[in-house]
Image 1 (tube, helix red, strand yellow):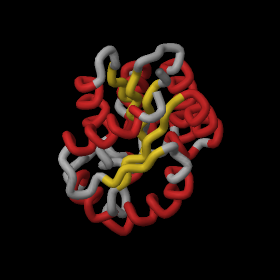
Image 2 (cartoon, one colour; image 1 turned 90 degrees about the horizontal axis):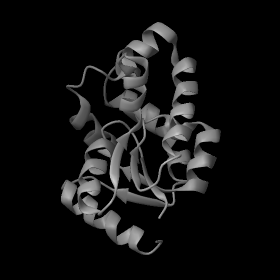
Image 3 (cartoon, one colour; image 1 turned 30 degrees about the vertical axis):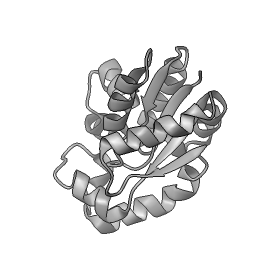
Image 4 (tube, one colour; image 1 turned 180 degrees about the horizontal axis):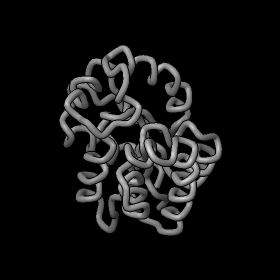
Length: 170
């Protein structure tokens, strides 16, 4: 089976859902693309942004995604902006099953408001900033094979929904 890819905004639950989904699907392993980048660079994402810039980070992100995809039976949690890059998007849509974890801006804000490691939220943090980022990204997120609304759902409910969806494409 193809790798499963979770995309969506920061706070959508990609990392949490990937872990829970891996527990549910025999033989699958969860991989967080941002954690791979942090490990490889020995720096946090926010420090990579601050010290080396967003362009450097985005190039690195593309390399890491392609490296991850040399393996199979993975559930890959992408960084929120990874699906913005056309090269990444085309590669992931062709080589994986891409699922957009969708949430309302208010939900996203509530989930991440106490997080200090989100580089795009450092300045002008607030629900308005989330709306702004989501507005810019939504057209690309909508290109995913599937979309799941995560508002007011438990992680178990979301995992069950994904299992139901991917059962049809195996």
